[in-house]
Image 1 (cartoon, rainbow, N blue to C red):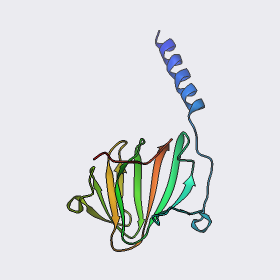
Image 2: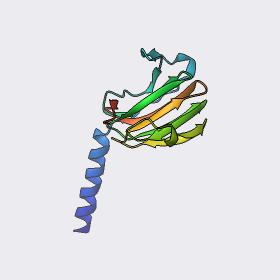
Image 3: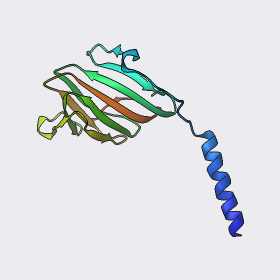
Length: 143
């Protein structure tokens, strides 16, 4: 009986690995990133994967000095790292300066799925790197 259970668990684990998307090998120098600019001036580059498809993805975003990121949310859990600059970040469905936390380069934070958050590149340009599991999207927070 115990052997049968162990065999079943091993088979299930191997089957899960067979369908789980995996990342290809990648070595990407920053100068080869392709940046797309939105009308609001925010630039985005896909580093790995594809946020629109199932699987792990990595993106970078450049926010010009003064950019306010209005409250929004995503369907996927995300982990973000501030690569450069000073950024102000907060959780909530309304932009609230009092709820912002000043963060410096090297800071990591999470953006749990369906959790509204907002930010401000108040004093300087910033670059943020985000890792998530697609498919992803950005939706305005309900007010």
